[in-house]
Length: 388
Image (cartoon, rainbow, N blue to C red; front, side, top):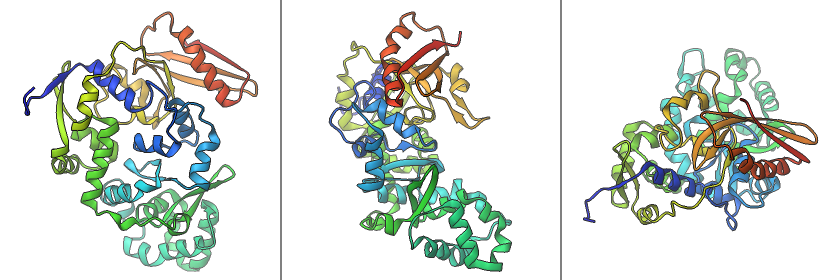
């Protein structure tokens, strides 16, 4: 193979490589929770249970307290807003990278709604609101409502023009998160709590990287798990503009190579060091069936989702009208069905909703995986059936 020759690979091999990189072909046996979360560029955490089920799908003998230990006691993980303005859990060692790579993404793109005239302008927020938030949080983490009430009390009558700001804490707390002022702390019961970043993670120095370095590093991390991928894929996953994603690719060109996907003729970027692994994958090994939760990172990594689902089924999984990404069943790394569940004290009932005709042996093969999930959920019996 010549130095500039582009390797062609079949779509099936691309999917297998993706499955391997997400620890879904073989569950991780030796890695700890922070390593697994870092390897997949963060655990999606918009729904409280998603990161638990995502880790259960990827780690042998995973227990919920392992994530809680890493998040709230060892503090080797942090939960806050990152890609696309959504909640993720990442290793704290990667926080400077994600912070600088994505900060401007929020303020210039996803968070622009806060620049409308009926919101206090950024200068007012900087001088008036943020100092009060930090003052109130200096005594320790607080729930949204308590934080809201105490900041309003400090502002007194001055708070009146800013009623909308104080009724939508997601917005203002996203902003303070992207500024590196606040993070999620341990929940107060079932409610989210927030802390000052400098108190919750006092050893973290956010100035370790600048924006260009951080975006380059984020691209390399992304391609290590989600590659081969395009600039559009990286932009869709991160929330950056395609032009910004392309700049990062150009900056990192010496570490990258391209492959061509045979069935669609598309050129995709990947790390040079991973090409040999991609070409030497064992394609004969039987991949396990996988039950992934809503919003699992595996289904949110690309704009072009050809590697994991047929285009004709996209709307059954990705549901923008209701703002939902379904829980899915993977067969050989591709989405073959969505699934829902009902849990009682003693039983878990899983309903499989096929996107296509499933092999007859699917339910039989799925039984041990479903029972493993039931055991993880603490029930005695697991029942699996299809919706048709």
